[in-house]
Length: 341
Image (cartoon, rainbow, N blue to C red):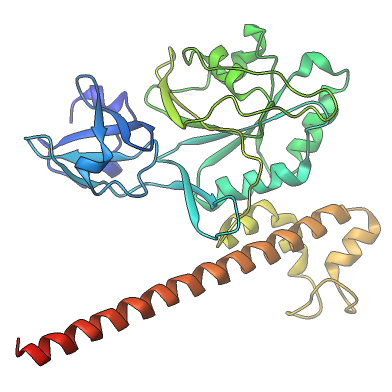
């Protein structure tokens, strides 16, 4: 493949899936009726109803086309940032695909929440995407260092950026690290300054909005997931604000984010210790001594219970779907037998 695809994030993982002369394009935006893709030459729009095979397609995906323009397939993803879709029905929703770094954006005001940040960190670590925390609106607080210390203590070696998106100088430590062809995704609640940050990094004309003074929260300004090319040569995926972030099947991410708890748990007297009232519990001892914040243990327990519950519901839905499919196949076989086929 030529270098122009590498500018769009093409890697050896994608190259290994197709012949050298394959016609490929990357998904830059997903709408209900169409998707916007770009290959070697220019952007084009693909009608979802006519193309077919685009169920579950996400921004950041790579598509392979035939010489006459027909969609052949979605290439296997290097990774996918997923969550439980909002609402009562439990299913996974892919937020973006083939991401190198996840910028978790929160602001230095009432919106700041360590528990919410932990959820985003689990999301990133579970799919082996490098997470970075971006603290915005540092110009509106006198204690930005305190916010940075709280954020940096949530995951070993996590990079924390303190930025004022209206001050280009404060963005240098972030913008200077963006490599050509690197894909970054931005996530966070509405009103924390994601679109303002994207504009400051060079993404064109992202709409921004005001926040409510009572709780420092905002309304959605970004309504469609889309990817933009940055002047630095990187690519930025802008996501709508996330009000509900529930996790499923994320033990790998939980183990990484809460490694401080799990390391102490290995020293417990009992292998099945629940870290409640058992004798010889190293985790409780660390909490009592102040070496481990009690909040970390509570947060871990909440996340594990939630992801186990959601994962069980998902598996139940899969089993029910398989059972229904099996019944329909048996019915079809029976009908064919009666007709002598």
